[in-house]
Amino acid sequence: MGMNVGSGSAKGADPEPMMEMNMTPLIDVLLVLIIMMIITIPKQNHSVNLNMPVGTPPPQTTQPVVVTIDVDFDGTILWDGQVVANRAELESKMNGVAAMPDQPEVHLRPNKLVEYKVVAGVMATAQRLGVTKIGMVGNEQFQ
Image 1 (tube, one colour):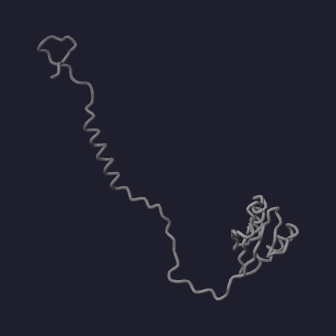
Image 2: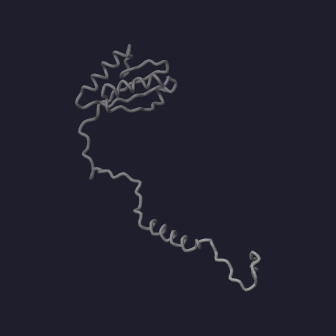
Image 3: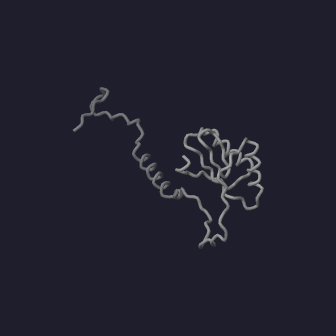
């Protein structure tokens, strides 16, 4: 039970009208609008559509040519086991690889103790000269 405490008006006088807006219908309408919006929003796809090849690829007719570049712990660069004297010689060999129509695979095998700037320099040279088939290869024997 509640008790109406007024402003001291006389008994039998009409109560003052309520000055507050009734928020219940407004909240009901907003909830209905939110539910309708959630239902009508299309589902978000977090995928990328790719055109993947169909079927099995044909077998390779020839084995790929592999060029191995080893980077020793002291920064010495070896091209297929032969020491590369300087950066100009490395660039000339990379130019030869980049000029081939069917580029050989270049396997870069850095020693785990070598400074990263030496390895990054070899990769930057390969990228700048247009060598496209280059990859890092781990080799327990060389490390």
